[in-house]
Image (cartoon, rainbow over all chains, first blue to last red; front, side, top):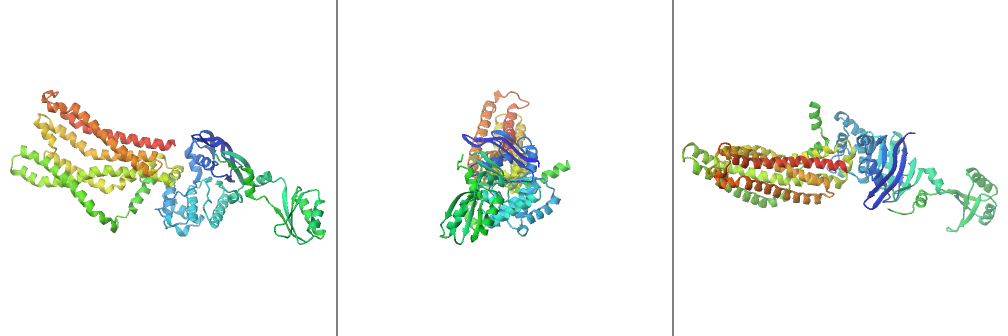
Length: 315
Length: 298
């Protein structure tokens, strides 16, 4: 896959404050790149630089093969940018809003009508076409904004916290929409301060903290980075002590901790083996006649990944 | 050429602003009429003062130079009231428009920035130039009733005042021995014609420039009016200075006039207001250009 966003040594200083410290980043075509970091880590700064709105103190960046600083117009043609605030004109109707931005993207009048219909259909707002933008809910405004950023059919979407401040349903809708857009062949560069919010849909994740990239890779790579050993929870109806002794004989079982919070017989084991040996463990355990009620791997929660990689430093 | 004209008409920024003008409700609501006595009183007061001064200055001419009776007297009788009326309206408009325009322009781009929509506009293919020019055009278009009225009234006023002997200072100049008062009158008429427009565009451009720099629209409005007042006082002082150096000494002492034929003093007296207007227009162009440059830079 070709590289579509490339960032090299990007540094931005606001007076004495350094927002970005030599950021290096590449995003491949067709990816959903989740850009995650705590508030104030430099996500918005990076995105504004990529959207040609801000000049960095040092460094270079390319989007779709064009330099963000020298070929701004080409970059603008290639990106759809959605800032972390709505940026809507309340006193316009939904279709007028899209019509205006389509005009700004030099889309001829004849094709605009159809385009607006298609865009509204895509973001599921066709029934609100003639309403004023002010009358829309937060989630709808966010979707309208997304429709606006798609008006010129850009290759890359740069979305700054598209899900912030939305209710769970609207959040799911935005996620679905992003999946759909990826299926349409768009590269999506999306930021969030909550990894689990976008983690599921991202193909790649970059974690930024205090202006520096602390981790970069696919979500699975991230998980492996954090979790060298897997934790398995085993629930038993009875014979808990016996099972504990039995498990201790396994070489892959590093540690056994009884979980006593609910008074029942739960064990939490730290396991060093692979999937096959874990399956063998289960089948032999059942074979040995233990009444296994629950056998579940505690996947490192995405929040854990995030918390372990970041230190809570804010520049 | 045609394509160019079409692209001007299809200017998205300008169309957005024009669409907004159409949305403005012309009926201001019932509560507004509580202010009517105040508005009416202020208008009548200003009108009375302007009419009185204009009428007096117009009257002083025929009394001295025209034979009583006949055509001139008839012109005087019908002309003076008309000129007073037209003059009042023109004067009010030519003062009001240049002082309203900066309120509109100073809020535009700063407001977009506050709303966060400026970033959106800048990531589209709209150029900085078309954003700035579209905003300027939109604001001036919003004043269209006043601009139209002023455009229609000024010729009447100027022609009227010129025909009837016009400005009392002409008389003063003639009395002081100026040989070509018509030269002064011509230049001063052109300058007087252009003056409100020069004021209007310069003030609008000041507002626009401040708007590009400012972060908050409320600050932009305040700074703009400060800048407009300073500019006005500056231009007025410059004009007065030039007048007092180049024109007034010659008027006080006619012997100092450089020649009798061309009437250099009259030329100067006419050229100075004209030069001020040209200065205003140059300033406008520079400010708009600076606003575009600043928006590009950030």
